[in-house]
Image (cartoon, rainbow, N blue to C red):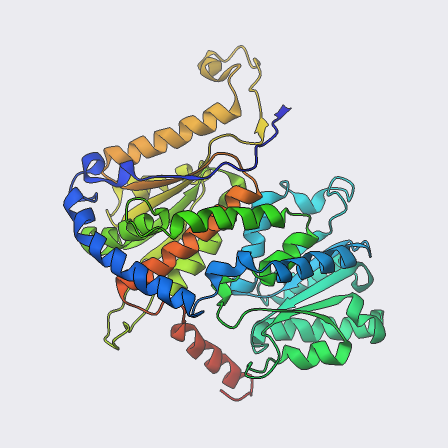
Length: 462
């Protein structure tokens, strides 16, 4: 096994050749005429998005430019790291949890929590509590003694029932284990900003009463777009990730995604393809299938981003439209043995987004063994890397033979710079897709009703 040193500043690539009509037929691929027809709409939407960006309506675009907040995040991470915590526990759900989970899986070694602290380079183990299963939460509490743990509670409003119930349990344990005065050393708050005109958060009095370090989520940044705010960056810094490289990746992708062009703006091109596949080709499902274990949770993060942003009953004019592709996560090569049969021979209602890594960080040779089994000769002295590449190519070629469209996102290497580029790309893509669908990309009215019902069932006010 050979470890390979990764160059840092190589950009990701987008390859749409397998989504064109020339590859999968006009019935299932985008034709030159369809690209030409949608270009004017994309350019008009670009003007709207850029104007709203200038007006500060959507803050996710420019989070990477906030050097002051990033400096605060890094300073706080250095401070809390000096305590030598064994565990970092994130209390949050949805956008408060999926981003850091994706980053942890992508950028830290596999089985990170099982490694010794030395092999973790002093970073704590990470537990992201994104549900309220009592068995899971109790198990976490047993694994994470309060005195050896830093908790980061994340909720913009402080009204998220799941997160606040977790916090109430943690506060009671901390008060008993470390005392009120020491709470500031074991609990960090990430919520909406304070000050004139800012909405109140139920976490504001918690931070004030216990004198806690508190980070602000900008008011113009929604949870599913918040990974490059302190929501994702503080735990990332605590885990030893290269947040500076992430910001550089965002900046590089912002340059590409700010182009007033359909074919030269990767986010707009992907958004247009996804939209046209849905409305023109009947591809109502969007599968994201990484061919790297490290990228598997990006597919989970993407599911929320795409579903919650585009799944809308009403359009911007108040008409019933019931839009939105259903996002599906898969994993290559694992799901070749569970899903690809359906993907190739089932309904022709899917577009496939393949995430691939051109060079893994490790090269692993398959040895010349089991010599009595001649049927394995084709594997001997090859590498697992080559086998993964062959599995990927085989799946894509099989999908093409079945007229199933594929768009590829190719990472030259797996590192903080390229992973940040992927996430930023998908955020801008989603913003453009919302304009093409003519819906509000940044609200989630369908989620709120369920929250109100649950609150009433618990005896609270809706």
